[in-house]
Length: 135
Image 1 (tube, rainbow, N blue to C red):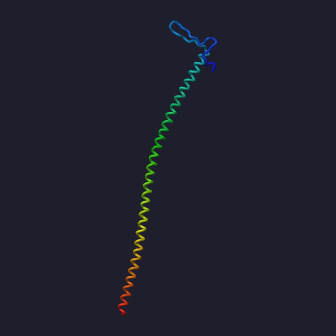
Image 2: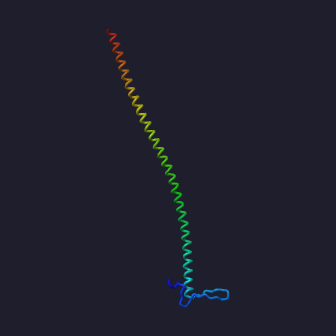
Image 3: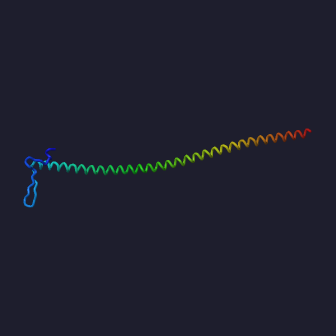
């Protein structure tokens, strides 16, 4: 780091004025340092270009993944709505089945009662006919 300092015991870098022009005079070692710094700066610029390209690719992939995520969320909302609809339909079908079972039970009960009443009526008619005939 000391090599990068602008202090020099030889009073370099030195500002020289030649007519209306100003010149900065530096030593060879300082020139080498400037060249090395320039190479390092160029390397950083090259690295930055690569990193910018990679960042752009990452941002595109990230955007695509975000789009896919949004689509999947929309699909999930559609599936959730379909599940709610199917559950409602299932609940209605179960209610219809319970009503049909009650109706079938009433019909069975009414058929049994009708049959018993018909049997009792026929038996009573037979008794009455038999009783009237034997009198």
